[in-house]
Length: 258
Image (cartoon, rainbow, N blue to C red):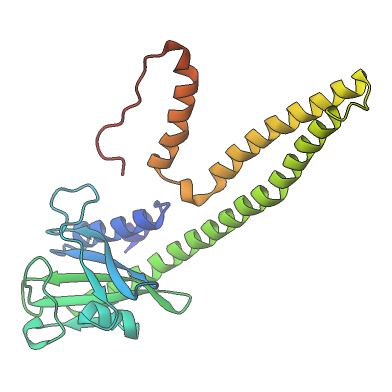
């Protein structure tokens, strides 16, 4: 449990947490298979977001035949609806059982609860009937609680960063834009001295620079840009601007960017 918790607290995004949970269920607990589902409130379904074992044969972060289960259907859908964990000792006797990559005889399903609602599901199956015991259920419930705490903290930080980015963009951005436009209008009025015109030009130039800097700050704060793909976009733009005089350049990325 200590090893699981320590590994979990080293993750910085919800996806990282999900994949860490799935991998550790196999690495530490010795499960055959583990899949993490996330609830999609808009579509009222559970979607596979991370997997370890047969559903992830090529490592990386690819899920084979990514499954979606409606809330209330199957064992996963039932747990998502009730919020209560289930331990199925014989899936042949449970009509709710949904076959994913292959049939297995036992299943354990535990919800991750955040703010009183099911946010995700930890689901594991085993080929042997009656494999999962009560101590497995107790461990997964503890893991779910630790994961919920970590995810909740991340979501709180994400909401705060989104609010800061929005407020900076709306308040500071609009003020700087007004300063830039008003200084330009003042310069073009024809009723100012050359000395005053030079001051207005400096105000216009400096506010323009601040607008560019503010745009970069807002971009960096926004959690929507916390991926390597997003980081590469501005790099490509900077490369294009710097290398334009050369008239011959290319920007290329290879392999997985996960």
